[in-house]
Image (cartoon, rainbow, N blue to C red; front, side):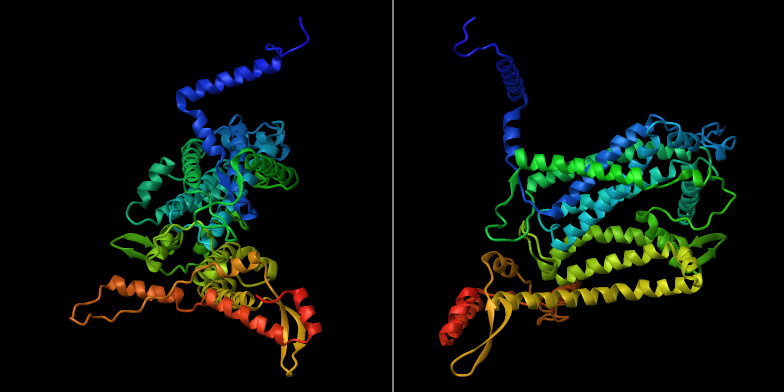
Length: 563
């Protein structure tokens, strides 16, 4: 065989030809080349805050992987058995098959306890990442047109994640999860008229029945993950269709995206980040114990446990139940109306979800802004929106703290009644205070930005001119710094119309409502720096430079002429 020329039958050539043939096959039938070409060139901006959504996605993937392992050994049955596993304190105790299989996973299945903890920790991180990602979207205004529907999908995903977490939390059938189910039963019973029937059908009779664990298992393993996957897929499809938002900066507009293409840069970075998230979750799961179900024992409706709290993402509902006074309970025609349970556990959380769903459309209606927005806001430039977000965070923190009022009372030697009244007071007082303080801080930061854009950074160096005038030398901003400070727009409040037109016709109520809301949002504002003001600042700086002594003039030139 000749050793010169090209060998058409080398393994590399054969592999290349097979790959090319497979690519041609797919391209001729589904147009793969066009799809891959367009998707591979998709540009994504690079900023650390955009990784919050990726953490949520990767945590869900880890949930699927670890959950698949757990389903191989978990038995979703409430049939009573006698435990014969290796955990000696429980040996011979009567318990459900669900709890016995959970103990076996913890003590007898190789790697079972690690997988249980990986599953639980990744569930907590999944919900936390969704919440923090939504906060980033809210504070930066990323929910504005054309992403209102994507925001709605995010809210739906958060609700599904809460439901998925609760159903999984209940599956071990230990004392802690059983108490959580008991609370849910009481919440459903508080629904007027139909509550009793819903409980009967859900539990298959009187609580706890023998059907709730298998039904929760079906929801947790099949129904809810399928819905979450569908919502995530649609959410990501809309991200690709709308192009990614980006933070303001030179060269960045609503018509472009500055960043890296999906292939190969962004895909490599995302792949590496997935393994980082996976590794951190494995490390936490191997070092930090969570949900030690063997400490609680199997669920028994007769004992009452103390000092138990649900996972953090459900804790706010428990806190609301503890904050609600018991007086709003009435008996009408022999039927008990338990508003003291119905209002805090169903009405208030329902209103919270409705407010989240409606906010993008409310803000768009108030501003009348129908334009597409691909550049993000700095939170300080939207003081009312930022104040509303901080107010919501403070409200949640108070509710969450109330869920542990018994533990705090014991730890600090306080009266639980006094502590509950203090938290009730904080629930109504702290959120408005947080709103006002946050709004004032944002306005102050805007004023600081305005001065910085016009005059530059203070240097602490004072110069005296020939005629005795004193002024401080400022270091000019870079183009990037100046752009960030002056690029935003400020909405102006609408004039509040009179109750009647000149011809006597009444002004529609929705027009007056919109004007009042517009004043609430934009009455207190700091106008952005205009090009005319920037030009005037430049001339002022040049005038000062002309009048300076030569030595100081040279010194100032080193710092920069002016803004």
